[in-house]
Length: 290
Image 1 (tube, rainbow, N blue to C red):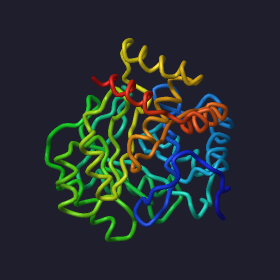
Image 2 (image 1 turned 45 degrees about the vertical axis):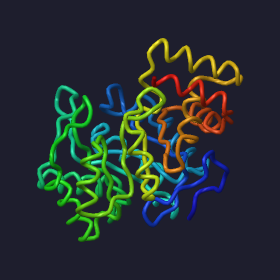
Image 3 (image 1 turned 180 degrees about the vertical axis):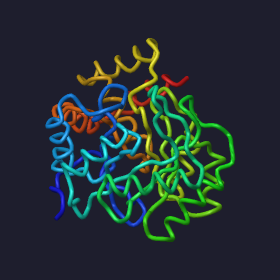
């Protein structure tokens, strides 16, 4: 079984031994409010997942902590047995607490349990890609990651994890992980306004490693929104579309995973990311991050 072959903006990028669409889908918004509990519209959530795959998307992003368990279980219900060309990426390194927080959980025993939980809820024997989530809710934290990452490497050698990546990582942590074992992706906060990873994006592109921005549409101040809106008006489009299109234009290794709980919004995101940007647009957008 393979997903429907449709044209998606950005083409494809090799993610490990797989080729995935640069336009993917992030499933976090399918959980309930605060990324806790079930969605208000379960059938609608299942339809979004099926529509994403029917649209040709071959890269889904999830985490056991979303819900928790809820989003993984929705993915399994909607899509299992999975299309041969679909890569489902997940994350370990954090959990949910009773207050809805996101405390870290990176001891070796915690990493192993989270991998086992992901295997169970997704209904697979091997996870396609596991990102080690680092830092905290405020962002990356400069700390050594060897023990946690080596635990994932061991699980990879056992055959329960195919590819490894990092999330919420500093450039130094990326280098530390690469000194231990190959990674295929880095998933960090990055968008038109938050561009502290510019050098990392370019380095990873040269190495053939994917860069996956989370919150690709967030972080705009009113002034930045004014600049973005000006370009959108000139192109007869929306700020959201311009922001997504800019990310695809920024570097060929950038993979998009915008999330939504609406089929209509999913299709709008796909169409928006295909927007053509001209040199004068790029020059104006470059001013947003100063």
